[in-house]
Length: 404
Image (cartoon, rainbow, N blue to C red):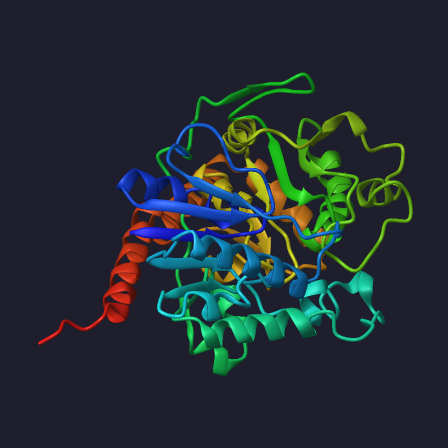
């Protein structure tokens, strides 16, 4: 089949799926605002790049108009895909139904936003804070329209599914994109030798990964809990991976140079700063090696989207600590496949971290259970088969009836 994938930051959710589809022999085209991916697995991809005129931060409607214009030009050139599959959160699918009216459209609306998504009445540090207007009004309307227009609408996790109103939830299918577990796996002999750190599996390594180091992903709780960990376990090391100098997705702005710097100012002189490693962005293979070394991975979050890094930590058998209401919490069984604590309980987080650092058997048990969970629910081999079934079903339902 000819699959047309649309994602403003391609490959995005198609990171592992698109190479798998190319490998299976599908013709894969992509539309995005970014340059095409390169390297192993991307041979054969046909990429079309768009740019919203005179806008560095385009609106949903501007993206929809720009992508619509590009698709009409491609249609004139003879492009008639068998399936259109798109992340609908940026408005790029707004005109798809009018352009390829006979082509099955699959959308990925991802999340229904609410005040708790941004921590209101969830994070105690935001007590008394309210939102100006409804920042999710237009994005939610676009999601609803995309679901109504589409032949199928997919979400990647149970928590994201439950965020939608019941009426829309009934029209959604839970189908994770999945991880390539042949490339992401546990390694009890893993070691990392970077300029900043030299670590290996079995050491008291605590990891935290987020695109932006921000309160939405529990950074403040981690930093508040860390002095108690240091005091009880002087050899413990905290590895922070992500961009420190970007405000992220939340409603707050840092008072100083970064949220991390703000949070660390609460530490007194007894906290050894040398035990904390601010690694910034790493390439994917380096990040995976660190996760293989992790004795405790912190996956705190507001009720937001499920991060790739959380699933990758589970796939590497890194024992996980998360909070009630996080995107991964509904997938776990507390004390069996992860530890689940209240989001605002810093003391509980300190205790949970020390529980893992001081109990190798517990680490192994949780890590193995986490790996099994990913194998069963977030495995690209399983997900790819489900996608193939969906493609075939939709393609057959849209095929013209044979003449009699």
